[in-house]
Length: 494
Ligand code: NAD
Image (cartoon, rainbow, N blue to C red; front, side, top):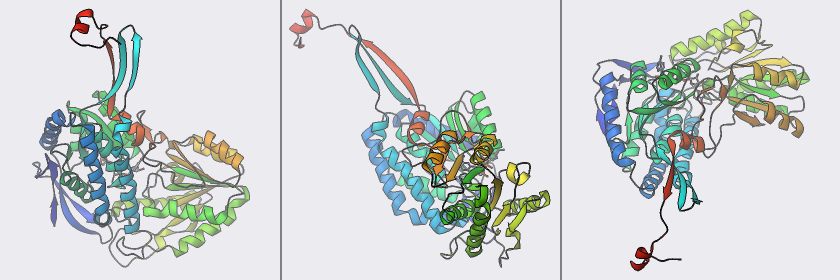
């Protein structure tokens, strides 16, 4: 089995703690490599490398940073298939989905290629007699990124491009479940010529995260993961004086109005609920059926579910792969039973699906007549289970979103412009889709939810990412008017 170690100062660096854990191929259930987990000393070595690199990197010209970023973009694109292959082998999502993830990640590198525009300051001349005032944004220093298993390539790319393009150096702590794709991308990053130490990767768990959050030389942390850990990372990091943005979990609702196109809504619900086995923070997990749309909508979703092909992610025929771990599969299956026991109607039971291998597969489930007191409604299931809540009016649907703990994404399906416009005002979520089930913003906007989906006040990537990784400085300067003697020395007077 391959060993997966750290990348520190541009070198593959052996972990010192002697703690390891297996990385699995979820489609076969087999352990495929051994991940070496960081000790405090390993994290300290990465921080020291990043700190030393920062001293020079922050003064590397914007022109050179931009050229490197373009090269990185091109190398990522040239290796997209390889990144996606590694991703599928450890995450399980189907290859086409993995390729889509890489493409969405590359958008953020493209945004960072335009960093000169983002770093333009502002200037007032003659603020007072002989006085000019100007504002600039400067890098923070060493910054850390802690990322989840579900987008092992894309989420690191939400962070790294803007962080390094603005002059910071970076330490990535990828998920221990699927570290190979981010590690490979870090190798490509070095291949294009970024100096050693600008990007370091430490493999690890809570030990590594805790050390990053307490190390005095780490100035900021970007986190994406579940809500309890996001809250922990935010409170620990900020208590230690660091700037933190921590994106958490979600329970995204999709309201389907009586006037909606049923086929379009059902297609959207199926791809948004079951794509990537429902392991997306922007997955739709609740379909809110308004009025008499419920019966035809449930029928249309069920008909599509029957045709879904579930299998290994590297099989081109598969449309959905396995879940990330055996435990995740069993936990998600348990929710179907919990929903049934609580009185929901199990329209399609994913536990009935049979698979002839030891992969962490689970069929897709549809629960109807779900109510807000049920665990299947209250918890983030993070698997291929779609709940249908039936309401009589649009107002009841919007109220469900407002009352929910999370506010990552929300969508409405309707043919009526006035309803859509009301929804864009009233939806209590950070990212809203109108006839778009998964409204993940493009790389030149920013990504982030509301309520328990985001701790901190800065969302990720795009302009807010640049803002997060820089701090403002305002300069006030006074120069005397040219004097007679300076005129004599050749200074112009007009
Ligand atoms: P997770 O919270 O278990 O892990 C995320 C990261 O935190 C990993 O790097 C992990 O090693 C680390 N970690 C885990 N336990 C820790 C602890 N006790 N102390 C310190 N660090 C710890 O999340 P996950 O299971 O990898 O990812 C799925 C979750 O991420 C879901 O809840 C999903 O909604 C969320 N997510 C949110 C977004 C978003 O943009 N809001 C995007 C992707 C995923």
